[in-house]
Image (cartoon, rainbow, N blue to C red):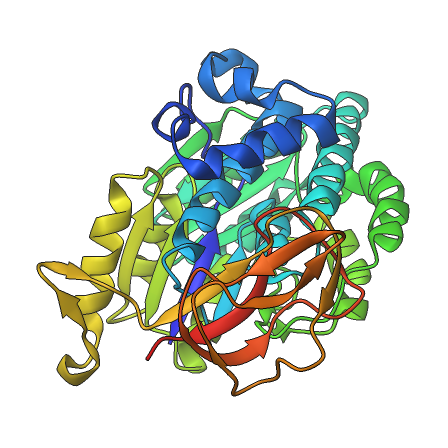
Length: 391
């Protein structure tokens, strides 16, 4: 089984949008700019490292970049069995699975990042990565510091992030070194994320999450808070709210997916941090990161190499996936045609339904496996509508 993972804040880098500027998936940037009332294109193309380090810019650009990569991957007809995201990436995962619409995801990320920015100003804090020490020992270091410092991220074996007041983090770092930590690395962040210092942001975000009203999904998302798979939209209001001031249990998320049969992990978005964490955490994991259009062919080759030989399909030297997604040609309310049902044979150009006044026509021939969008659901441009298996 295959999992899509999405990175969090800290993966952004200057110019990360340039490889995508001429790609069809770049159209998401214009839509995000309109919803956020920000020039996202400028941030992705021209912002320097200092500007991108601002929490409000880091989260928005990472979210949009990851969904551009997802959009390009979906055009290849590749679907996961599970999705998961690290911190901010959890919002990307929820948008990827349809629990949140693209516009809802953008609004929530803007609200989240702004709330965290102001919470960080009100409660000055910092974070540091502790390397080479067991989880339990890092927690002991935080308790022995006798100050405002907590574990913020369980990233991978021997890689734990602590956060809190500058004095608390320094004290815990000193104890961690006494206990055998190989290294403690300060992180360039604007707050003590995933700690009680984010409580004001949690109170503010709770209302925005409730207003978004996350939907049920077919593809489960693994939560940072409890490391369990969730497909019910009603569960995410409390999970996302708790995530702000609770540790990210990323190591546990990876292990949970492995226990459910996932050994192929595809990181979609800038950087490749999660790929390294998966390698360290899951024995025998196959991993790959995709952040540029040039890496899409490499992804297909990687999938082909991991598939049973009989399941591979080639034409010339290129792999063509046997599954295709029909995506929305516009934003609006989706209405499927009543006489096109699961199992129907679809020809190229067949109308599957309408989004407002716009026809949804299949660019592929195949057998309709299921509708992904529900009748009456408001969809966004390029949101998956239906799933076909080619013949």
